[in-house]
Length: 122
Image (tube, rainbow, N blue to C red; front, side):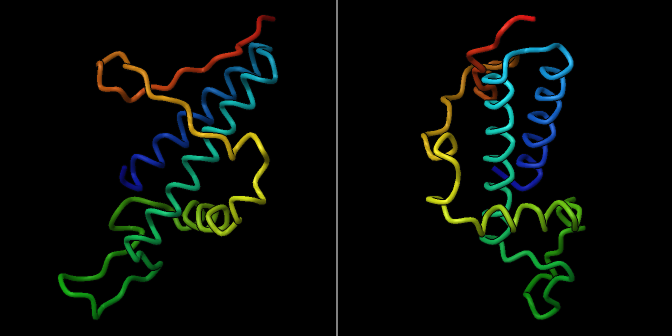
């Protein structure tokens, strides 16, 4: 996964959560969408740390500076990601400590979707 993909997953999870709130879907399903967003944000922060991305970049880095702008991540988003990444795993809620959901085949059959269970009705 790349930081851009993590951003995409975060945005999609937020859209799903908002749709569920608007449609009056049960809280369990809304919480699963929020959990997925949190996982995407945490993974995005880990990826940025692993890549050594700095806000202004490192001019001494061979091949040029790797900056947030060069990979398409906004500064405010990266700050949120870094802050979530710094929370120790054992301090996260018990729901977020369980294993992530297993991917299912999406419309393109690429394995990029996730099953959302527990969706209630109005």
